[in-house]
Amino acid sequence: MTAFPHDGNLLRAPVPEDRIAFDPAFGTRFMLFVDTEEEFDWTAPFRRTGHGVTALAGMARGQAYFAAAGVKPVYVTDYPVVDSDAAADMIGGWLAEGRADIGAHLHPWVNPPHVEEVTAANSYVGFLPETVERAKLEALCERIAARFGARPIAYRAGRYGVGPNSARLLEEAGFRLDSSVRSRFDYSGQYGPDFQGLPQHPYWAGPERRLVELPLSTAFVGLLRGGGERLYRAAQGMGPMAGALSRARMLSRVPLTPEGITGREAMAAIDALIEEGVRVLNFSFHSPTLEPGHTPYVRNESDRTAFYRWWDAVLNHLARRGVLPATLDQLLDAVPVRGRACQAA
Image (tube, rainbow, N blue to C red; front, side, top):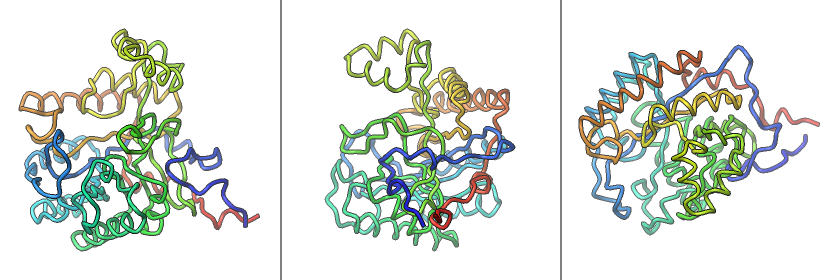
């Protein structure tokens, strides 16, 4: 039995043999992950209290929209939402109808056990002591299982905050898919992880290679997009140069989200990712955005109308490009088996 080239740490780039090769028949697909979380003041310091779970009408409207569009969202859900009777009943109904999937989303400052100091640095669960990260993850998994009858198999760390132990802990907890890696972003200046240089395509992670990493999708667009991440990093280090290149539509970094990204930008990003050969486009947004007044992206009813117009345009563009939606089960069923058992010498 041979060892893997590295330990599967989510902060390290995978080796080529860990890239997941889908059957050509799978085509190019897209998925939607919704960071399903409490509402809180994004501009204030983190607090254990002072949040709400009130955006339920907006969530119900959003779920109806995506169900009508043939999209089955994965609601990666954090502790305050799972702990809310009203929210759990609503999401449980969607699961029973087969119109949504549930996953786990860990905000450490509101997830028991409450043993760490609440600070910006401690808002990244992957950088907490291993025993604390494990305990918080287990508490969340147990609460989800109690509410919905099964432990979650999909995960996204709050604030994309995976750390050096996260992949191993996720494997041990029975997760099959992680979607925390936000390729082409660097949060190290905010105490968080640095995902620069990590791939856009899905790959195996974890020490036993039982965990599928599905990175959030981000493209470089513009006339200089061929320079990719290296050119973007260089421009970022030159003060106003990055902004000037973006305004001139020469080089921009565009994540696949309706939050702060125009429809035109998103469609250009879709085209760029397809050109790169990315087989699974990973869209995301935060659940409080579905109700006006909770995030900077939807402040009023006009913004919410624009949010759905964004999706109308983007879903139409995906259809024109032949990119079909994929469910969580469809994705995992399309992944070939890889694990330590397959590594016999």
